[in-house]
Length: 134
Image 1 (cartoon, rainbow, N blue to C red):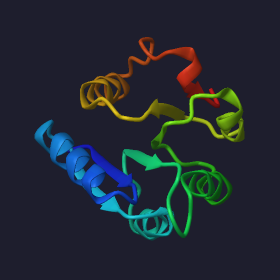
Image 2: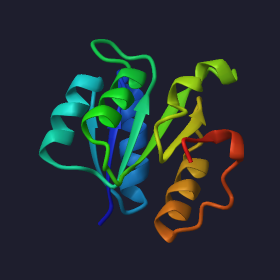
Image 3: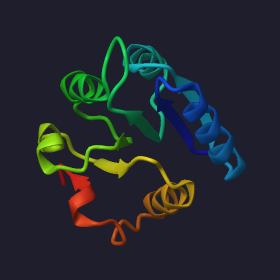
Image 4: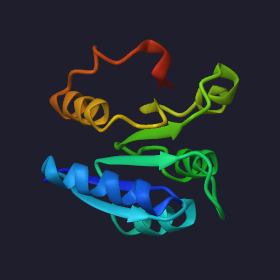
């Protein structure tokens, strides 16, 4: 079973994503911020990390930068959830490989399609603007 870690400070977002992804057959763990996510990552790497950008204690950007610095050989995909669509809000991630932006509000169907494509090795359907660090 593929493992997904979700980091988001909004409890209802965590609940909806967790329930929806578990229904699709994924094992899902959650954390309320980047620091909690790092603690979980130190124990076990997921197959995919889904993180919000704006969170208390450690933002999604800080989490991604930390992962890149201290886990440079990581294999898991990172989905970054954001409502900011301007390219200047994504430039920080240019040097972080295997990272994909998803716009909020997140479409569960779109997320599941991207997860299924990723695990099937078919990322051709992803929009070029969403994929960073390739």
